[in-house]
Length: 277
View 1 (cartoon, helix red, strand yellow):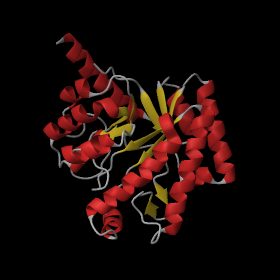
View 2 (cartoon, one colour):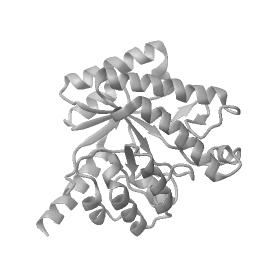
View 3 (tube, one colour):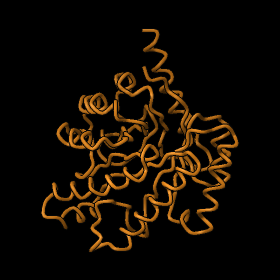
View 4 (cartoon, helix red, strand yellow):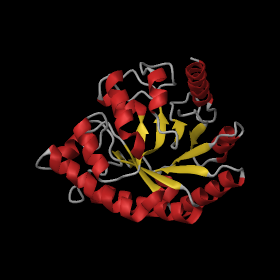
C-alpha cells in the first residue's frame, strides 16, 4: 500500500525553500513562473535546485509555469491565434527539459487548465476531438524530448481530463508518464468519489507523481486534506506505491506551509488506521 511521504511545494525563493526544508521533506516541487525564464531568473532557478539538492533532497519536480501574461499555459492554444503563448510554452518546456537532464530532476507539464479561455481555445478547433488530438500531438513531442524526465498532469478541461474511461484509454495508449491531481479529477466528476476511485485504479500503473489535494468537487478550491469531500480512506490503497507525491494546497501564507503539513498528518492517520484494521 502507498505510504504517505512528505512532499512539499514552493517557489524558488529562499524564504519558501527554507520554510519547507526545515520539515525534511522527501520531495520538493518547484512552482515556477514566467519570471524564472528570463536569463537571470533561469540562473536563479538553477541555483535554487542545486541548493535543495545540497540539503539531501533528490526527488525534485519542476512545475511548468501556470501563466503567461493574462493567459493560462494551455497546450491546446493554437499557434495561429496565440503565437506568443504557443512559443512561450515551447521554449519554457525546452528549458525545463534541459534542466531536468542537467540536474536529474523531473518536469511536470499541464495537459490543460479550466475556465472560459480554454473553452474558447477548444472552440477554435472543428471539434473537441480535434482539439484533444492537437494536445496529444504536442504532448507526444514533449514526451519524446523529455523521456523519463517529463510527466503530464490532468486538467479540468475536455482535452486532457481523467475520470472518463474512454479518454483515459486514449491517454494510456500514448504511454505518457502521468501526474494525477486528485482534486482535478474529483471536480471533473462533480464530486463523485466512486468515479475518482475508478480513475485512480485504472491509471495507477502509469502514474509517477500525485498532487494530493482535497476539494468540494465543484470549483478549483485546492483544499487541505480533510476539509473537502474526497473520501481518502478508499483512495490511499489505490495510489501507485512507486510514485512520488506532494500536497498542493492553498496556503494562507506562502512562507508557511502549515496546511501542507496538516494534510500529511491527516493522511498518515488514515494510513495507520488502515494498517491496524
